[in-house]
Image 1 (cartoon, rainbow, N blue to C red):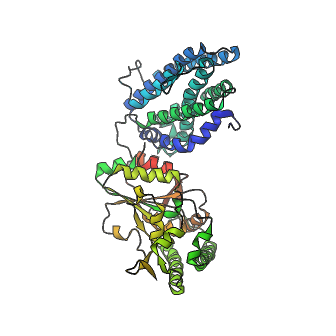
Image 2: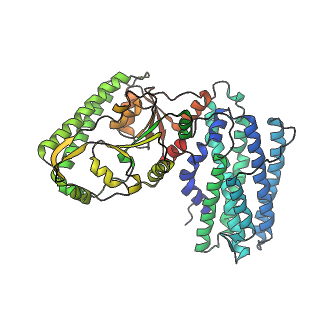
Image 3: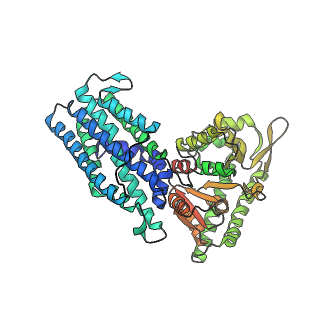
Length: 516
């Protein structure tokens, strides 16, 4: 089960991508990175931070008595003493840097923090999921360390990811009020504490049975989610640009979210399921991609990339891509490949592919929000509407679909004609107050991406899109960088700016738009 670095590293790698996006895109983290978090909000955070550290010291005192092995007992004692020194230094440093006359009292503990501390002390006292543990000497120390271990690792992670963003600060970076705090938590000293805690978890759980390891992982993940939640619920007194959904709701501005259909589910590997379309459907699309590849090689090789965004030039270049698509569709119509097919045959021939988990979670959260100011759309450049709708479970059927549609007779049999889809942004031309977010990854998405207020490019395999975009002066920056810069300026997102934002997962997009 454990990879190199033991179970602690295994658990961290397993859940980092899923959970840490919400840590990075929390209003607290974004405001700290932007250097404009109000000091009062940070004071409250510092108090809770110290409260966590003091709670860990108490938990170590409790589980030290449960440990029989002297070597392991020494490990726990060293961790406890290390935290005590950290608390003392932290008090002295922060009293000096943040201008405390004395540390203010904690005015209240939010529900998420309360749940975490309850998990910590219940586990330390030998109670997990309402049941008293039988093997307190073996299980309690390992289980408790599983609850503590994510804490320091999350702090190191946050500081290391936020610290480089202080370089976006408009003046001298030494003026950034929170840079010293970020430097402290990204320091080798704090990294060593995180490593020591993980090594203690690895060592003490080394002899654990399989069912214990499953519980250790469950507790680790539960603790990690609660700690990320702690940052998400930090009280922020000034305006923030995240989560976008709440900001837009406050401004009473409609939010339109578009996603390329190909990003929603794994591709169909077994093309035998498409035999009902004859081989011509596959041949025509393959021909399109061959022509597209040749065309892209031509336009990217003809002239060097430019530094200034050339929107008109990009539009002209992509018009040819549209012509390739139009020609392919016309050939499909002429061949009759889409003729005399019943809707049932189409749905039965293409099995319902599983949606990617993070995509499903993102859109289910959108549906659950039940906000009339949010429009959801799925865009497809080649799949037909019925194919797309067949891919979605019933709770996502309310999504708008932008794709070519097959024409049917009164008997629900295809005529062979294909009704061309209009551009997803055509209907928004007269409604500039709508904020448009487009999520894509292909060259066909490029024009929509640059026209959107926020164009988000998902994934690392976007070489062709990037080559074409950069040829016309489009620049790519990580979405978090864009969010932090926007937080510094508290400005509006700008369409046709020539800037596209990159992410590695839908979790980042969900964190940006909805938060936790």
